[in-house]
Image 1 (cartoon, helix red, strand yellow):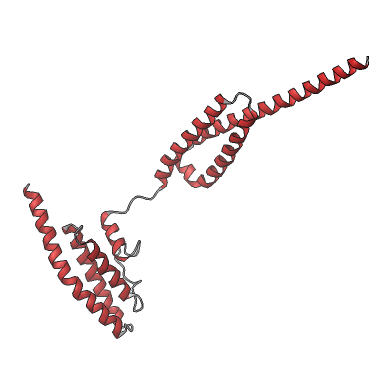
Image 2 (cartoon, helix red, strand yellow; image 1 turned 180 degrees about the horizontal axis):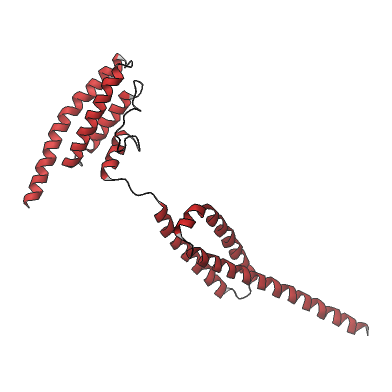
Length: 219
């Protein structure tokens, strides 16, 4: 009788453990399925809505991805589940690259890129305002402008040189205002040196760019 009770107890214990194991495995399978469903559901959301909530989407994805990865350890034959998780991971990364590219601001025009290089990103826009240039920074502005032109003079087209001249004249106009605001004699002298350096460099290279352009047109 005692032996029967022991066997019965062991059997119940095994059944209990099996039940727990099955429950754990079912939960793990459900976690994987929820992860797959989440990735598919994100792909069905309008781009405008995603843009406004992308941080939350990313945080939720990371959480579900980590949970699904951990759940694989609780699935006995997890080859199929692993394949599902990996496929959804690839699907999400491809979608993420595609959607974030849509969020990115449009690339600046070639003209704006040139202005950014000459003065710093976003310093000169379509309004061509030089109000940010003052007696304290005007020498460094000229310095960046002339050195940038010097370093890239062989790459500029005729249109680039025309834009450079326009920017140079606008900067000179700002200098006339700044001089009345207390430009130091030392900075004035240094700027004069930079202007002497720029003038022949512009003339020679602008002519060279035009000559190259005419040559290409004849081909």
